[in-house]
Every structure is written in structure tokens, then in C-alpha cells.
Image 1 (tube, one colour):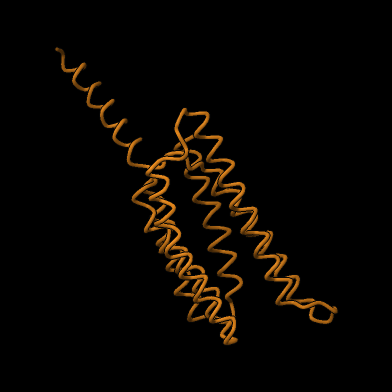
Image 2: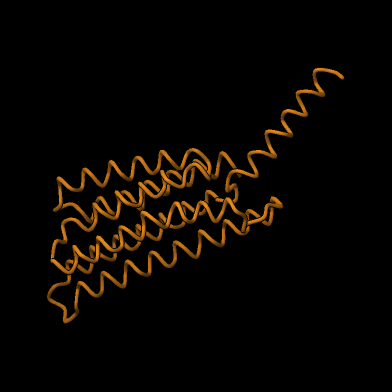
Length: 195
């Protein structure tokens, strides 16, 4: 056997091992579109905060805004990941997918409970930092099942969250940066690298 044959065999084995141990269907568009939705949500929240003279419940309106952003982000992430998996011939629902979702869910559900406690105690200054920090932890935790670059996004989200702790008056801006700008940059890099 030639050296080229061995090299090709090793490349094939490496590809099979990577496909069996990583969720490769995550599309760069799954980062770009949620980032765009987050920026729209950010500007909507800024507008709502400036409309205190209107006869609306600002807290409820911002909550609805956040739920809308989250819903659109999840729908587009699932859609683009499914589309990429179908195009590349990958299975979307595997044991790796299940492990990745558990790694994401534990920090995110913990954050949801903590944020609810902060909200009920009127500790609003801790809500945005907690969202960013726990989201970053979730990405780092699930990173071992995805492309390695997502760990860097997670670390940047954690850093943004800690900075937001010390500058609570700019919390909404950090939210827009972390969930908007960072996602768009990450998604663009991933889209160009793994089309």
C-alpha cells in the first residue's frame, strides 16, 4: 500500500470519528439570525424604556420582547441546523445531540430559576449579567459536542456578563452586545469557515 492510501484512510477514519462525536449541523446562520433578532429586541427594549409616559406596563412589554427574541432565535437555530444536516446528509437527532442538549439545558434551567428569584426580589441589576454568564457557561459546557469555536463565544459571553455586574446601569447595552453583536460575529465566522 502506498503512503497516499494510508493518508486517505486516516482522513476517512478521522472524519467518521468527528461525525460520531460532534454535532456538526450547527449552521453559521444559526448564530447570525439570533444575533439580528437580539439587536432588534435590544432597540425595542430601549424604545420601551424611553416611553414611560405611555400607558403600558414596561416590565411586561420587555418580558414579551425577550420571549419573542428567544422564540425567534430558537426557531431559526433549529431551522438552519436541520437544513444544514439535510444538505450534508447528517442525522440531526443522535446521542451526541441529546448529550449536547443536556449540557446546554442544565446551566440554562439553573439560570432561569436564579433570574426568577432576582426578579421576584426586585434585584433587576443581576438579571442581565446572570443571563450572559449562565449562557456562556452553557456554551462552554456544550462545546465539547460542537465545533470548538463555540467555547470562545461562551467565554466572551461570560466576560461580558461579569463586566455587566460592575456596570449595572449599562445592562441592556451589554445584553445587546452579548446576544446581538457577539452572535453575529461568531455566526459570520462559522458560516465562512464551515459552509
